[in-house]
Image (cartoon, rainbow, N blue to C red; front, side):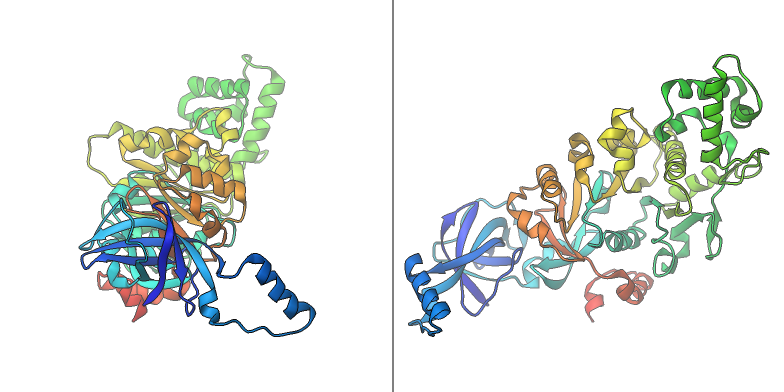
Length: 495
């Protein structure tokens, strides 16, 4: 199905005259056949008009039509006026094996539409991220990557609100549950990943675990921690000043595991009374402690001693773990996330040589812990994992609509980026600069991405892959069937 012919350009930007019977789209994938065994894959980066008539003649003809209502016929209109496309050289495919492009197709070479059989290499790995997309056309070709490689490095999922980040993440979590050597720990501030349709529907219940203060759903583990597991450093992320942090450390050093209770009951002459009163007031709000010293939140003085150990066992079992934080304030959620992540980071660091699943921490609204303003006030366990977690088989998945708030060095370390629609030019520019591939020609395509459309850009892929994200709720019955038959082929979704 020939769609056009190459009429000029250069290696990085070829010019294609489009056949009059076809309408190409931004981001569409095309193929030029150099030989029976070698093809070149192109992507449409821009579209504009061409004509054999001069601009003055075209304006004159338009004037006749607009001002005098005179219809003007062209002699052979499909030859004289046409569409031109700029196409980018993306990949050379030799006998089904992809490689970086190093040549241009023959001048006047014919270009055709992509066929599913052109890209068998996209479906050879262990974990599916979605379906191949060409423009707005969806192919039944699973886009897969090596899960071990992807999740031993950091990921970024970014896009404007409403473009499908949560639906994408549901798909990622579902397919991650099929990986025996991988565990994902998800802090879920909107309680959207576990309830049906969600991970609660995963057929193998031993692969998914959810912790929540709401036990209305089946299979929920109680989210409660004994105050003895808290350490002063866990409170660094919630905005205590340096003198206030010193006060916390003084109580911890003096009273050990009982330091939280003693903070409210025992006086100290080491700090001013006003300072102690401020810290107590803030800690009451943060830990949900009333005037009678009743601990009514997730941190209690009776019970919850084994919750961290239970979480660690779930991680070592390779589970997808959902932490429902929807009922907490922002600072409560940050404290909880810091406590759990610090405990796991300490365990992974101390047991570096022991075989265990790769652990990926999923952070919604990631700039709250990885933002420049936050890190200017001091590091935290999440920034530590971002910079050195790979040494201990730990990684992050950062989800945000504002990647510009994350420092450039951390963005650069996120070797897999899934980009959904972004209208804001400033945010697109940040992503383009930090992408593993040259996306300078893709800014228009990123701005025009519709809901459920994305670009998968990874060091472990051969090119920036246009992605279609299946609507999770609609595809759930087939996904469940695929798990039961141990086949997660998206070809089944089309049957």
